Structures are given as C-alpha cells and as structure tokens.
Length: 258
Image 1: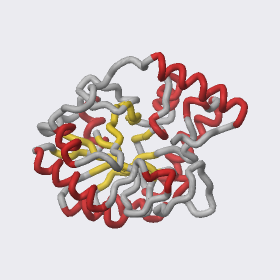
Image 2 (image 1 turned 180 degrees about the vertical axis):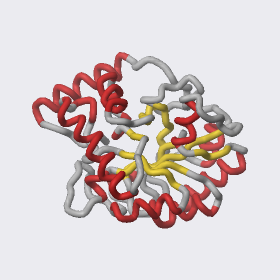
Image 3 (image 1 turned 60 degrees about the vertical axis):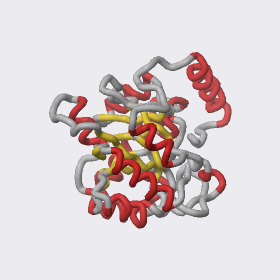
Image 4 (image 1 turned 60 degrees about the horizontal axis):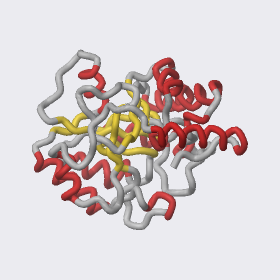
C-alpha cells in the first residue's frame, strides 16, 4: 500500500519531501501497471479482511492524503487513464471554505470537488478535521476529529464514509478503539512497511512515497522487497516518541501531525 501526498512541480517547503512531480507519479503508475499488480480501493481490502470478498491476485492499494489541489485534476486523470482505482483521504478543515486546520498553507482542493473524485474512480475517506496528532488528544477532542470529518464528507457525498487515515500515521490503542467506535471499518497508519494478509484493520501499514523515490524503488515494493512487512510491535523508540509528544501537547496544545 503506497501513500502519496501532493503531486506538483513546485510544492511549499513543508510538504516538499513528500511531494512527487506529475511526471514522477506517471512513471510510478506505469511501473505498478507493468508489475502485474492490480490496484484496488481500501474498501475492497476491508471487504477481504472481513471475509466478505476475495481480492484479485497481487493487489496493491494507492492512497493520497490531505486533499491537495492536484488531486481532482491531473492526478485523478492519470489514475483514470490507466484504469487504476485509489483512495483519497481528505482533511475537511483544510478543504472547507471558512474552516481552519493545522496544515500549513498549500494549494488545496475544495469540499465541493470531493464528488468529482468518485467520478474518476477514487474512493473517499476521512483524514480528520484539523490534521492533529490524534494520539495526543483528549477523549472529547479525539472524538470530534473522527466524527466531524466523517459527517462533513458524508453530507458532501451523500453516502457513508467508512475509512480513516491517521494524520502522519500517529495512533495508539485508544485511538484505534475510538476509530472503531466512530464507525470506521478500517484505518490506515504509515509504519513505512508493506501490508500483509495478517495486517491489522485499524492500523494498516503504508509505505510513504518521498520525492527521492525512484521507479526502481516502486518496482522493488511491487515485488514485496525493500521494506519489512506488518504487523509488528511498536518499537521502544516509537512508544517513547509518543509519550514525549503527549507531554508537549499538554503544554502547547494540539500540534500539526507532520
């Protein structure tokens, strides 16, 4: 499962490391097509994990986080031209006029373009309201981030939104329980790992694509190489980093997850 963010030639500095150019994306998509992998949505994966439907041989899930301005345009067109479904996780505070989020300034799509993503074959999931570090929030704030973003997208699309992406992958057992309680069928993290048949439905692993990743890197991932496979236990470093961020949030308040 691959995680993309912005697809643009001249991104703001804060997201540049996680941005690919339109040509890079097209090269990556061609590698995926030529690898024999079959792109599916997170909804298809969820149905498989729940035992309701089989997956095609050698599936891959392509995801796009936040809702940058390229998504309903050239990015969606590149996917549609190759017949590749994908899943887009939208930060509602960043794409809704008059609302605010913790994301720094960047060209973003708007909420009224969400339905056009579905016309291109993209599935829409939630990426919270503000893009906060969910594992540092209190119970009330966490519930708001999960339920309000879901409700906004459901109102815009006219149907249920069943899938969630944790901002920057930050989660914890409490966050995963809250995601389930909010009505999500799956939630994706990051973990910089390959997903597997044994992966956990509420912290599905994704490989984060950076600007320096080449078609050869993507080809290796498609062969199941170049990264460890989930699930696996959080390392002591991950647990310690979470505790530090929680302490910082008590002092400074919610912080951008990025």
